[in-house]
Image 1: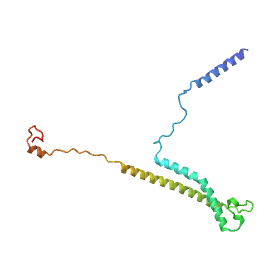
Image 2: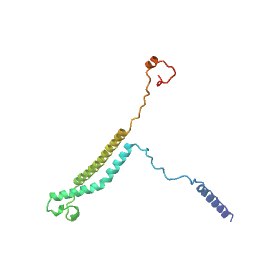
Image 3: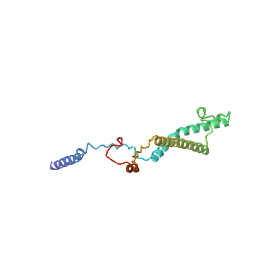
Image 4: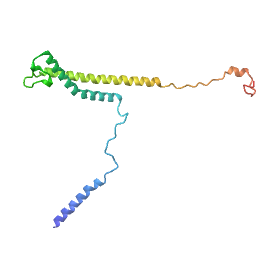
Length: 169
C-alpha cells in the first residue's frame, strides 16, 4: 500500500510537470513563416528560378510530343508496315520497339526543346524589362533648374542710387 502511494505520487508529479510547459507556451507567436519580400531575391535569382520551372515544366509535354512525332516519322518512313504504326494505332504484339539509342536521341531532343522554350522566355522577359526601363527613363522629366538673373554690376555704377525705384527714374 505504501509502495502504491509512492507510485501514484510520482505519476502525479511527472504528469504535473510535463503538462506545465504546454501551458507556458507563447500563444501570440505565429508559427507561420513570413512571406518573401519584394526585394529579398535579386532579379537574376528570380530569372534563374523561372528558367528552371519552365524547363522542367515543359519537359513532360515536350517529351510526349517528341516521342509521338518520332513514332509518326517512323511510320511514314516504313509506309504500309503495321509494325511501325504510330502510338494511338500501334499494336503492342507486333510493334517494333525503339532501341536505347533512339530513345536517348528522342529524349535529348525533348530536353533541348525544353531548354529552348525556357531560353526564349528568358530572352523575351529580359528584352521587355529593358524596354520598360528605357521608357521609364525617357518619360522621367528632367528637373527644372532655376538660374537667378544677376543684375549687371556695370549698370549699378552708372546710375546713381537715390533710393527711388527704377520706375521713377
